[in-house]
Length: 465
Image (cartoon, rainbow, N blue to C red):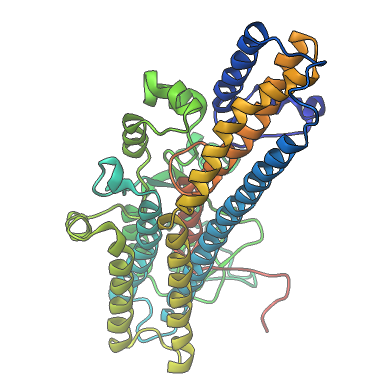
């Protein structure tokens, strides 16, 4: 999706953007109409005093009907675009709610901090990320671009943690903890790599970079130590602990997390960049290159078993397939004594998962249901006729050749651009410049899921009695 600003220079900067613009694709039609009018002006004898066009009313009817078709098509195309975006928001909202519920419900189940509990939670975060990614690659129709599975097997999430030693504590202080923890090395809060705290920690040798699997192992080692209600010096990673008021918040760095810029697209597409700019990326080689370079990332990567299981299924069944994994995993965890909430409360989680699937199929409805063919065919035919009629009418009422050509160019360009806008947005999913940024949506969803990795609650200004 094109990100732009209308603040500077009275909003005229948008006129300099070529990539994703409908104007370059409308210019050929305008040039054809202008050239046709220019030829007519030297091959015909009628002018403004000729009786050929006594009144432009018949052509006005034609222009109004065509304009009505174009405007209605643009309106319906925008409705499809916005409906697709709304459906994606519903999916992300409901599935993130379900992830929160499953993780937090399991923290009050049987043996909430044993190995099985941590494996369940990390697997649940991973599967939720995978569920969203399978939807994204299905909407983008990666299989049609020669990619069997548009999900990267690589785990690209890199976290930076600060490590610190618990200082020797004064027994006379109110928050005195167990003296066995003095000088104990602890891994602190996850931080964004560009933060000042990380830069300081790197200089002092206290920064540790980890992927999610290494982070899980560190958490597994630290939770061996029994949790105590006393608050230790420095942020901890113990289950149930709270953040201190000066604890930095964490944010993961993700490789390739942003949408591709125009310069990056030039490197990937090579000679096909300008073709993609003008012709909406319809070239097959363009689509294949973009798909190969924009595979969706999943928290924890993709195992060989998962890759084999997903590639063996048709693309339109993979979301359903991963959803069945989530349900099975939750049911097995319940049988083991986890998810320690009453059944009526737990049933709400399954309902939220179902609501997310409803949004999923609403988005797929838009992706796999094209705009009605008769409407598109009739609009295209009338637009071609319009290109031939406009020069005739203008020549009958305008004497100056330069003004005839200018009016013909502008009028045909405007009508053609309306049609190109409809073509651009009627299918909001894909790899075209103005399609919804599915890659960024997957990244944002992953970022939300990473906040569930550590079972912490920020401390408030109200002390607990």
